Image 1 (cartoon, one colour):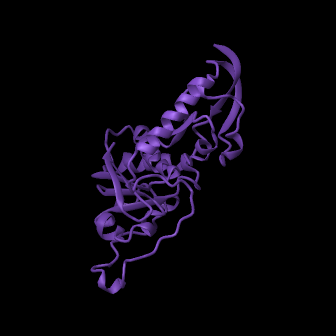
Image 2 (cartoon, rainbow, N blue to C red; image 1 turned 180 degrees about the horizontal axis):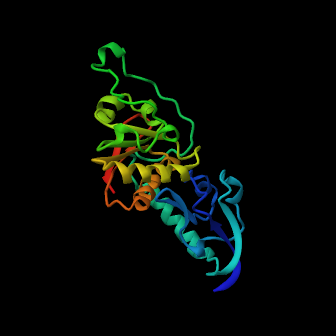
Image 3 (cartoon, rainbow, N blue to C red; image 1 turned 90 degrees about the vertical axis):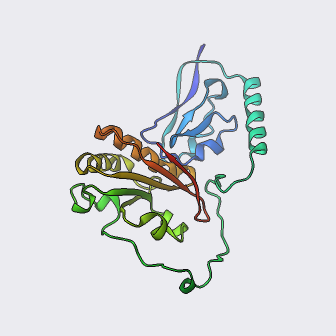
Length: 242
């Protein structure tokens, strides 16, 4: 152990965008549970190449006692990451980060696509505007969704929204601390039947999962929720109960 410069990540500020991951040449940072984490001190050289990439100013350099930077171990770590990425089969859930993409729509004429009637049963939708005491939350199946999801998923209304109350937010661009408090209050006072979280596959969007986890912990209510990931073509690519 030695006193040296090393990365410090403020998780309260981090929105999980993943920009620091791509800027760290040593592979020392990963997105875990929607937050950037230093996976090992020995992979961090302390030079701070990731500082300028963080849009939330959540990364700094501190001088403290830590394990020495191990160049050989870091090279081995990077090689294993490369092999893992190469070996992993391509799937709809491989994350494109913030890469700009365009898609050719093959949905055809909307008139031939079956029932496209709206399943929206409330207004407003945006979490900032919602009151925890609003009547339609009482005993509801609540869906907390990233606001990009309905644009990507053509059958969002029929497949996911039907029969649910909804609250939408953007974990990358919005201040999520008030959201955590508000969702906690919604859970606490409304005896929800269920909670479903829906987000896009990009790293920053996993902040929706973080909001739900923190809100449940803050509410003191013992409950699980269904976490659904949507790929950029609008397909459900992962569903799990957390």
